[in-house]
Length: 330
Image (cartoon, rainbow, N blue to C red; front, side, top):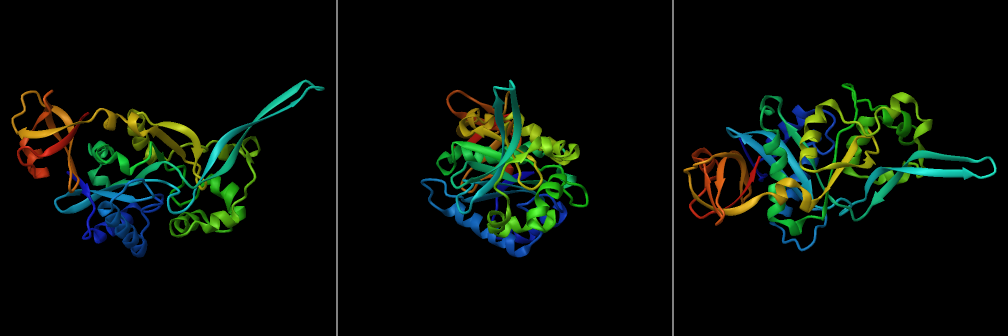
């Protein structure tokens, strides 16, 4: 398996991944026009000179035997091109001294960001490719970021997929949002990728009092879909934590971390490839750049910046002696 930056020949492979992914991944819709636009934006972003992040898109694909079996992505800045909406968990405190009563009530407040953090997302692996490849696909993005920190914000977020049934129903959306938007969850999720103006026009701006929600809705606030639990676990190991924000449609949690504190960024090492003999092999993610490619293999890092890599990884990455590489020991 190898993860690489996407190229202009990948549209059909993207369509196949979108079809297999089905519902639930907002940024991977089975829509050729949308995917073509995102592909074009990504190619533009990779080739663009960036001084400050402005909402550029970076997509990476996992490839095996010339077949795309996975995808992941980065948005350099949410709110860069259009507002980023989320619900923030807050607490309202009320007090009456005469009655000696003080109450605290949790509420959800609609928040609109015009200058937000970097976001990772679009993480999907075909079922046949999931065993042992999740870390490679997820963490490869961080090795790309580590090399090009100027392209990204100081904070990274990940919106985790919330509770949605196999029929595409969201308990939170059905109870709270459908009254205002008048369309079903799947439609709203799809439209949010094309144009978010309907959110601005139709969503209520008043806080939602959590204690007024029925139990079956309260129970899904900040909860992840069962298929998303492995991805959440991997992010936690990279120092990501729940930041109190939830998705406006299905109430999935948002996890965040300061960019410099992400383990595979702070603990990765840069050096030059010096040979394929590894005395003390360690399980490693290995990345090379221009263009970006990443695989999982065996490596050994020496204090002088020299790195030895196993032969199979050398072949996958097309390495030559003295090529610059970055490694992250798992």
